[in-house]
Length: 303
Image 1 (tube, rainbow, N blue to C red):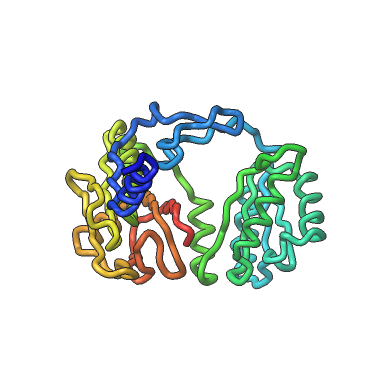
Image 2: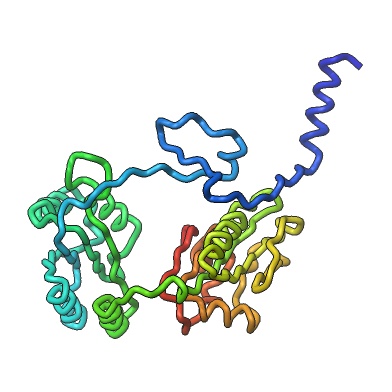
């Protein structure tokens, strides 16, 4: 067999051979490179696993004020916002439709008000029908163009609830906010493993577990495997649940009692994976608990 034929044969053989799963490791945060646009290009392995941390620099907000931006008009929503404004000594900016905040004329008018007010915090209180991707993108543009650099110039937060009663309760939680001690934090990680080769979400859960363990905290972990991840790596240890889905398109609609209890007890839930309408990290919307102690949910999923 000629050399070029041998090379072609080997390449075809490699293409037809199931890929070997990457070695699964849980790196220490101190070992992860910090990179920015000026950093040397990381190795292929680092890029493939997104095993790096973006290097950020300190950027102070432009002022010390508190501003509320809203398009609510119903007094059932405005009354709680006025109470919040009084408590925070805040200014309320009213926009006709926050869903159109990205439009040049609306953006320019609100930007001028914010520059005059010099906020440190900006609370965004949209109507449900205004809360869309374009609104979020428009707010990002607004809050990153209050000065000449590209960084956010105030700390943003969104005040959103399904009805006026829940909205009023949310405002009260904001007003009565109290920090908790580290020992009182109850974290939980949910990871979606989409295939045998894609284990980044599992790796992130492992990193979180190691970080929280340095504070004496245990991190219950739920790993949900799609049918294509039938030979993917697993995390081990107490309060670790590995859920294998059997059919493509199946999502978790109900957790077994021990898992549901751990999820309900968690005050901080961190989710890593993919999403689609009605599903996040292979958890169906029906699988979300209606009553829980969840105070903060951080989701890396699209939905």
